Image (cartoon, rainbow, N blue to C red):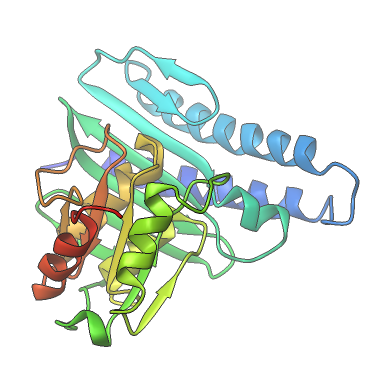
Length: 260
């Protein structure tokens, strides 16, 4: 069983990082000539507080984080951190971004924490112990058909109209009840886990985007694979997450089809 202190520390670190993001958000507006530098500072400040809090409790652990941190990758425990998932949303004060903290033990994700500071929502998943939102057990939706589903795609930031990610989106679009692009993979996965979304896919994410959320979906009772239906690997940019119903197979067939 996972050490309770690991989960407690991750939750406290996620909340501390979220508070930093909210504090920095008031220091700029989208009308500023160059908010990018301030956002980078906010990103680093949030990451630093996470690492400092974890390191004070677990000095022998390794880290992989978005802002250039790849430390002691061969240690049994490795934290996989995205201090700000949804940067573009954050810059524009669109309240859909989160802190994401995953913990890997011997190459297997065992803990996932996602904190949404705008809604004060803390999602937690522990391997073999389920997933929770603010201490309440969560489950995915029961939608079984794409025609009734609310699904979300992740697209790279700068792509052409004939990019495979765009073509996949167009492949699904006529079949889905609603198809969106939201800008935060961590929250998308958390929302699939708790039933607010029915499915989410991407071919452009990094390990820190999905480490926590992939466990969240699995522990809530959903399904997570590659778009082909093959075994999911958080180190590879290929993900299809769903509520685990027949919807998963319907999407898999569309996403794995030849792109014209």
